[in-house]
Image 1 (cartoon, rainbow, N blue to C red):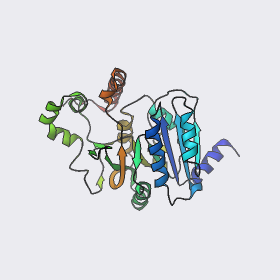
Image 2: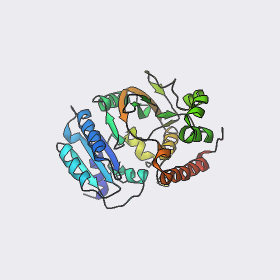
Image 3: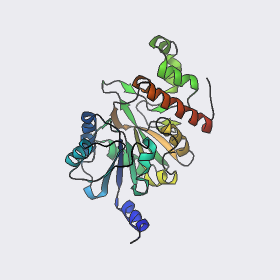
Image 4: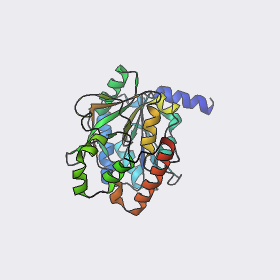
Amino acid sequence: MSSSDKAARDVAEHLLTVSIVTFQPDMEILRRTLESLVAALTGFEHNLVKVFVIQNSDSNAVPLAVARILANYHFEIITGHGNIGFGAAHNLILPKTGRFHLILNPDIEMDPAALINAIHFMSNNRECGLVTPKAHWPDGQRQYLCKNYPALFDLLLRGFAPALLKQIFAKRLDRYEMRTETADSDFWDPPIVSGCFMFFDGDILRRLNGFDPSYFLYFEDFDLSLRTSQITRIVYVPKVKVIHAGGHAAKKGMKHIRLFAKSARTFYRRHGLRLV
C-alpha cells in the first residue's frame, strides 16, 4: 500500500481527529485540557478517534501525561521539528485529519457535551464548515471569541489601552467582540473566530491547506477564518462550551508584542488595512 493510500485510509477510518500544539506548556493546565478532552470523548468509539500532540519544544513530561490520560485512545506524539510556529505545527498532521477535526489549544477545558454538540450541529447543517464555541475565562466571565474585521485602532485599544480608555470606548469594543450577536442563540457567519478551539469539517480544512505558515504566532486564526468564509459558513454554537485560560498577548512581554506586530503587518498586507 502506498503512503497516499494509507493516509486516505486513515482519514476514512477516523470520525474525529484532534490536534494540540504545545510549547513549554504549563503541565497542570495541559492535564486539565487532556482530562476534559477524555470526558468529552465519552460515548465515542475509541477506534474512530485519534489525538495528535505536536511538540514545538522538547518535553518528557508531555508524552508521559498524554500516554497516561489518553491511554484508551489512539494518539500520536510528533516531536523533533523545533518551534516552527502554531499554524505550521498544526499543519503537520493535515493529511491525517478525519471527517471532523478539532484544533485545540492546550489551555482549553471543554464541557463534556462540547464535541457531541459540535458534531450534531455540523451533521445537521452541512453548509457549516467551522464551529466556534461559547467561551468563559476560568473566573467565569464571558470571553468573546468572535470578532468583526479588526481596525488597527481596535487592536491597539483592546490590547494595550489602560482601563479608563477602554471604558470610554466600551461600546466600540463590544461591537468588535460581537457581544450582542454571540449570546445564547446560534449565530451564522462571524467574520473572524479564535484559533483556540476550531471545530472543522475535515474536508474543508484540507481544501484550505490549513493555516498559512507565514504567521508564526498570532493572526493565523484571523487569516484562516477569512479564507474559510470564502468556501463555507462559520457558526457560533453556544451549546458548544469551553473554558479558555489563554490570550493577553500584551501581558506576555516584548517578545510576544513583537510577534503580534509582525503578524498584524502580514495580515493587513494580505487582507487590507483598516485604521479606525
